Image (cartoon, rainbow, N blue to C red; front, side, top):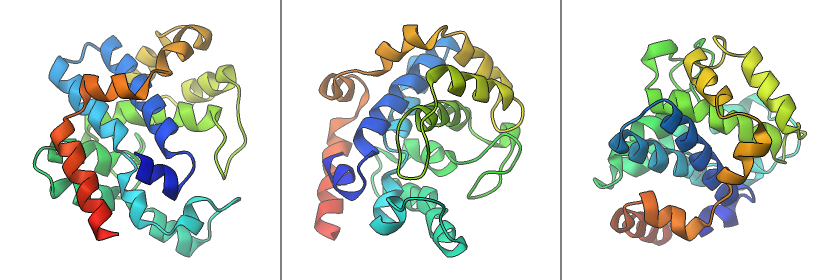
Length: 209
């Protein structure tokens, strides 16, 4: 994860927060231990493909140009390609590949909609959007937790799976669940991550650099 930190400032903390929130939603939805494991790993590695996107695009303030967006939209595909190189991590590929798809088909890279999107990616989309709204990035202004929850509820059945939104809302007041999504990184990795695949992945990426 340190390599991602060096590429764009938000990656590590964002990935851990989103993974933890996705797991909280998944637990509310009654996912099995196996499904939660896949969701956690996929969420943690969702943006690994951005290592193949020029850094100046990732940290650019303001809107991207059409050409820059065309490059950015490849990062889910890049991430899936990276994970396919490692059998111990390939199971997370569908979430990584589909994490920017949206319920109404307006997402990318395939424009999938509704049940065409794997459940883990539908859960991830809600967790990711909440985190994007409530934390500073190079291209957005910060909303309060309450504003973010309201925005997500408005988009149920449009951008997001309404069932996932229902379970997200069942987490309660943000003041109650926010402390639960901030956890020690080391303990989180030990809890859900296949360490052999983790070491092999980043050793290989390092040698490719």
